[in-house]
Length: 302
Image (tube, rainbow, N blue to C red):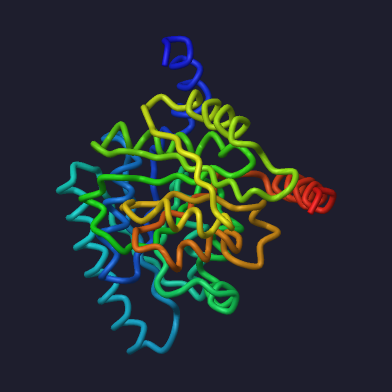
């Protein structure tokens, strides 16, 4: 990549990820440190971590026990973040609404990024019942990420970023750039060709991937995979990945699932950890783009 491309890339991607305040919402002791490790990979030493646990209001004995357990987890996780070299502050809140407490706290500390964890399989019922993740994603005043942790993120060697028919959002590329600048990892961009009528040829796909690569400041590999479905192609590509970074398959306000059927099915079936990332965007803008994408899909040849 030449110097002009690097300067252009820096202007369009990396500058957007200068996170100053990251809100890390923890609840599960098994994944709390993994969330901090993930936040460590996407930030710099200038970033402050706000380690948060929300106690739901209830009877006094239950609320006290829950608050004590949450406070212990917050302090343990805060100390872990400090050992990683980050400024970390504990934050414990009692509220009748966990997602409301997370969103309000993010506004109060002027968070640039909210990071949460997901436990269990992603299904339509699970997503509807997981009001915390759903409501935070819908109302977050900043970028938001949901981590499905399966591997030790401190030992990530390879990251996979699927590239769909539309170019990834600059922030998603910037996220990968940031991790690669902080950690010694390989990265692979993958585009799946299914051979359906009206879809890209391999030559078009190669040119398309090259354009995506030129938006990045770090060196990454780009590959085209032929498969009978996008899901099967990505499952094949992810077999040796430690982390997969996904974004909404269509504008998230239109999805019945968390991030779209392909993204959610992939998250359920891969053996790697998955970070589902949604850059902040005004809701009306997201609805407009989603509507245009839906109408475009309706008129495509089948």
